[in-house]
Length: 233
Figure 1 (cartoon, helix red, strand yellow):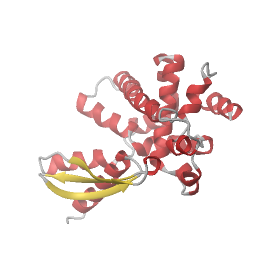
Figure 2 (cartoon, rainbow, N blue to C red):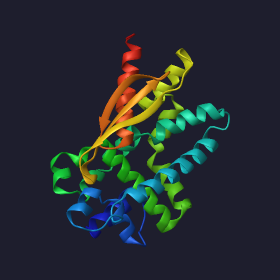
Figure 3 (cartoon, rainbow, N blue to C red):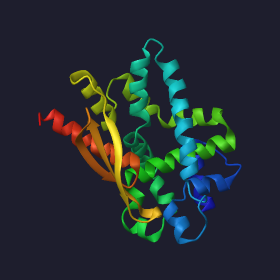
Figure 4 (cartoon, one colour):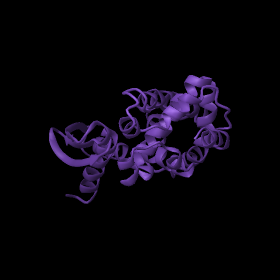
C-alpha cells in the first residue's frame, strides 16, 4: 500500500511524503476502521474537515489573483462551483483515487470506490494531509495544478455549478428567498449511515434527497427542488 501511495502522490501532486501515516489515514474510510477495530480517529473524517477549510482558502486566494476585476459575489459563486462535491468527484475520478481507498468489505461491495461523496471526501482529506505534512504553500501549489482545467473552464464560463448553488441563484433571483436545509433522518450503523435532507423555501418543503453524507443528501434535495422549479411545478 505504501508503494502505491507514493506513486499516487508523485504522479498527481509531485510530492514526496514525510509522514506517510497521514496520507494512509486520508485514504481510510470509517467502514475500514470499524471492520478492523482501529479506533474512532483512525479514519479520514478529521482530515476531511481540515482539508475542506484549506481547500476553500487556497481556491479563494487563487481566484482573487486570477480574476482581479470580479466582485465578491461572482468570486463566491466561482468558489462554490470549484469546491462542490461534483467538481471534487470528477478530479478524484480522474486520479483513479477510488482504487487507493481502504474500505470495509460492505462499502467496497456496494460501489464505494465510485461513490461521489466518498471520493470527494477522500480528496479533501488528502489535501488536509498535505497541509499537515508540508504546509499551506504546498497545498496551494497542488490545488492550482490539480484544479487547472476547472480554472480554465471558469475563465470561459463553462464550469458546471453544483445544485445547491444553482438553486440559491434561482430562488434569490426569481423568488427573493434563500433555501434552508435540514437533515430530517439518519439511519444505519455509524460506518454506513444514510442521511435524508429536505430543502425549505419560505418554510415549505420543496425537495428531498438522501445520500451517504449530509452533503450528498443536501445536493440531492437541491437537485429535486431545482428541477421542479425549472419545470414550473
